[in-house]
Image (cartoon, rainbow, N blue to C red; front, side):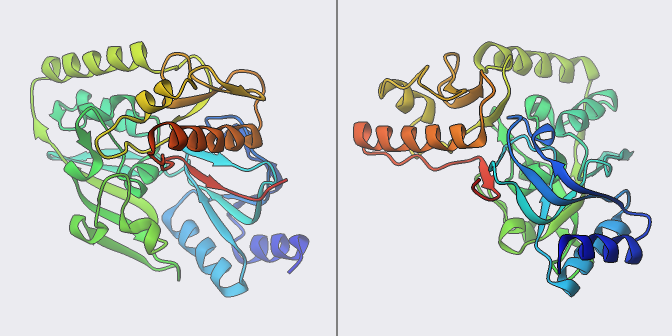
Length: 304
C-alpha cells in the first residue's frame, strides 16, 4: 500500500488513534538525530496499541515501536512503515509493596515514585534515562542493580496483537537483553516488587548515585548513553581511552572527554556521524587490544 492509503485505512479503522505523516524523529531521541517516520502514531491506551499492531499484521505494514529514545540511534534515512510512540502510556501506581508502571513512564520517574512511597529496590535506576518498556527490553541496569532484580510481571502485546501477562522467568532476562526482543513483544506495563524502607535512607542512596553519575557522565550534551556493552574482564571506556580515542571527533559526534564510553553530540551531529565514529572506535580498539566492542545502543532505520 502507498503511504496515503495506509494513513487513510488506519484513521478509518482506528479513528481515535493520533496519526501523523512524515514526522521528524530527531526530537524523540536523546541524540537529537535521525530521519523521518513514514507514519507516526501515538496510542493512548493498551487497546489502541494492540489494535495498531494487529493492523500492521493484517495489512503487512512494517512496524517500529519507539519508547523515549534514550539508548537508540535512528539512521538519517528514517523509518519506513509505521512508528508507534508509546510515551502516552506513562501511568504509575502503587499496590502495597508493588509498583505498576506503564511502558512509557520514565524509569527515573518510577524510582522517584518509589522514594515517595518509601519503597526500596529501584535506587539504582535513579539515573537511567530510558522508559519502562525500554528498560525491560534490554534489562537495563546501573551501579550493581538491574531491572530483573525487582521485576515480577509484565503485560505485553504479541506480534499478532494479543495482550498477555508474562512472569519474570518468561522474560529470560540476561545482561542487557531479554526475550522481549527475540519474540518481538511490545511491553505495555511492568510490575515491580519492592521493600518498605525509610524514605531518608532511600533518598541518601539515590543522592549518592546521582552525584556519581553527574561526576562521571557527560550529561551536558545529547547522547545515547553508554554506547558499548562491558566486555568480559574489561571496561569499554578504559579500552577506548587506552586506544587514544578520547576526544576523537567525526562530524559533530565526539567520544566524550568526560567518559570515553559515551559518544556525545557536540555540534549538530547526524546519525551517520555517530555510526561512523562507532565503527572507527570498534576497529581501533580491536587493533589496539584485540577486543571487539559490542554495541549496547540499538541502531535502527534506513541509510540516507
